[in-house]
Picture: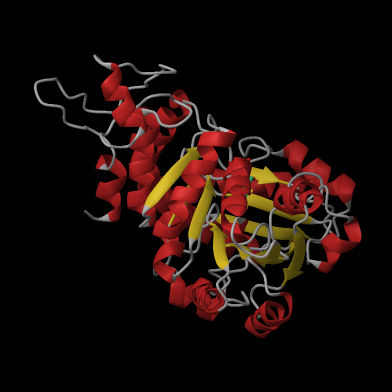
Amino acid sequence: MNFHSKAVHAGDRKRKAGTPIPVTTPIHTAASFFYDSLESIDKVFAKEIEGYAYSRYDNPTNAALEELVSSLESAHGSLATASGMSALQIAITAALIDRRKHVLAANAIYGATVKLLQQVFEPFGTTNAFVDICDLDAVQKAIDTEKPGVILMESISNPLLRIGQIDKIAEMARKVGACLIVDNTFATPALIRPLELGAHISLSSATKYLSGHGDVIGGLVSCDEEHFEPVRALSRIYGPILGPFECYLTMRGIKTFPLRIERQNQNAILLAQHLSQHSKIQTVYFPGLSHHPDQETTARLLPPNMFGAMISFEIKGADKAAIFAFFDKLKMIVPATSLGDVHTMALYPAIASHRDIPPKQRLRLGIQDNLVRLSAGIESIEDIIEDLDQALHESVAEDN
Ligand SMILES: Cc1ncc(COP(=O)(O)O)c(C=O)c1O
């Protein structure tokens, strides 16, 4: 099946002889399952027959979502987790089990991921280093000197939208036996499928584009054959699984996700063009613009005319007060934390996604205090532009 068809059909309508087949996967809320003989459940535990025993291990609703996501990510197997952060935590833990406890991470990465590495993994003896993932020489040098067990990057980075060469980094990682984990939240499997490019694990915050309606917190870990069992085994012990209701909402969201992302991409292109010519905007960060530093990688790894639906921009001369005023003046665009929803959203990285990164380090990463991050929704482009323009007009002085 092609991508749009997989999104609608994969995982649904499991056949059981003689029973009616629901057209969409039901929400199985049962914590546990029983059989007509104890021997059967013994065989389920022993994996001699297919079945479910206890929902922390496995649940039919979760299994349907996981099959769907594996299909979209070209994965051997996937796990639905309680949040994007728990997806990161379980993926990194599983990858480090038999490897050197050193993580080489992209320096342009979600703030909470940095905290996870420094405040959760470091106290348990893991060390971390950070590198410019778009500078392949620097990555190779870091691999040679640091000998990481895990390399961690985002397919499109948050918030400056840099695009690393996953295929080349995967090659480097494989040469030294390191595991490449790609956080695919911003690109989504509609744009990039990291496992097809050689990564070992691709994960996403399902909270964002995949569920897409601002009503789910969830995560997804998609693995190659080597890493699926360790991830699944850890999950059975840790228990960070996604609840069946959220699995249902995520599956429901995914059915329209390829359509939504096309529209969001299209809106993002038009918004980036508009903002680039706006007198109150200093710089626009968007992979579809000719000055974006990763043009070649974008052309090589992303589908034609698909650049993701995130745009970041700096407002000319705006201090914190002007940025706050801009957010307060927005009428339709939702000034809230998150991204990838049907509604357009604006976020101020300095006080939200990158709040915990010290200001000097933030500036070194190129995240200025006048940077705004926008997640394009599916509304009419005229309305999004009108709202941005009026908020800029009302909040930023003309002579800035
Ligand atoms: C790139 C990226 N990865 C992971 C996460 C964490 O996802 P969640 O909030 O679902 O835990 C986020 C959240 O914003 C994110 O932007």
